[in-house]
Length: 62
Image 1 (cartoon, rainbow, N blue to C red):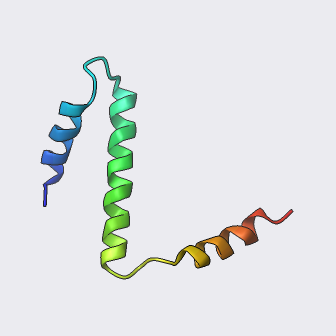
Image 2 (spheres, rainbow, N blue to C red; image 1 turned 120 degrees about the horizontal axis):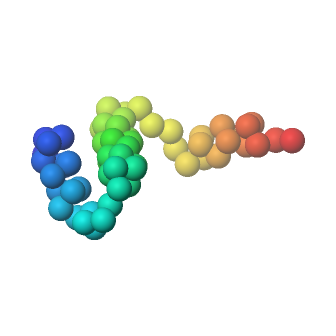
Image 3 (cartoon, rainbow, N blue to C red; image 1 turned 120 degrees about the vertical axis):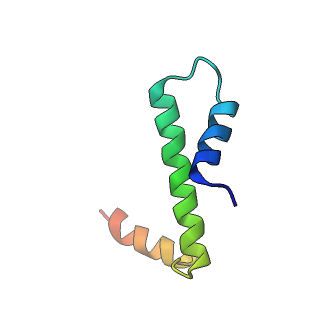
């Protein structure tokens, strides 16, 4: 498992040289969301596809 510092270095190595600070921030944000999602799955804090659809359907009703 990588440390946060290793993840940032790897990210920077893969981004184009002309990346903006905003580009880097966005990619760091996405990496953190993925890390948290994996952590939640590992800890059993997730919902099924059907549960997610049910939750969204309540929000999307006119």
